[in-house]
Image (cartoon, rainbow, N blue to C red):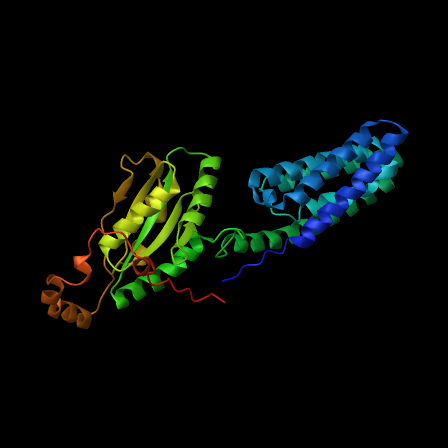
Length: 346
């Protein structure tokens, strides 16, 4: 599946806005160093950072900091020079269009209304009422549009792949893939397991390092996922359990950093019984580097399937080709397991 993120237009708009603000700031600084010129320079620099490092805007704390700073800068510009910067009042309605924490919308609205009141109070009650009415109307329209954008943002968070630079999928995509991959593994009589990984040393830098190394260390058919709590997961499909154990240790050695792993076997299991939140909780505190979890509850089967499994019990007890896997170095043919199919690839 190919996910295309449409951020070029947004980056261009931010870059254009930063250039205009910086040019205006340079013009005013050439006349005289004023507080208005400094605020324009700070706002232009902030927009320049957003345009050049647009991926930072996906971080909640960075987005909140930028939006709150822009609101305060616009308020200061309007109050310091209302004759020149009164037009910035419409910017408060624009801020309400962006995805934001719930508390930030009333905060920006309050800053905008107070700024309008202080800027237009000296012009008389008629202009004050008109200005507050127009500003409140624009903010209401911005809040309505922001609510729609919030729903779109939530849908984007649930997209299969949120990072265009790494082949790491989301937890939402994992829950969609599990039923199909478990059914296919059982049908083709191959081994399937889910490996949950977390660095021993917690923190954003450690998680990002693990994400980068896992993306490069895993084979193309070993699908990687990022869970909501920061842990990573690998869907490992091999010809047998011993080969899975060998490949699992090879993968962890290639990561070249202290990590903890929990391995959940998935053959003939019920995907709805998989509690990812519980499995990934306190994963970095696991005493063992690799912890093998007990099998999940089996899929609910009807009477006919129970009779079939009873008839085949004797054949299951007999040694099979999969049970004679040896711990030998994996050859090129062994490493190429059946690649997980994804119905939404295109």
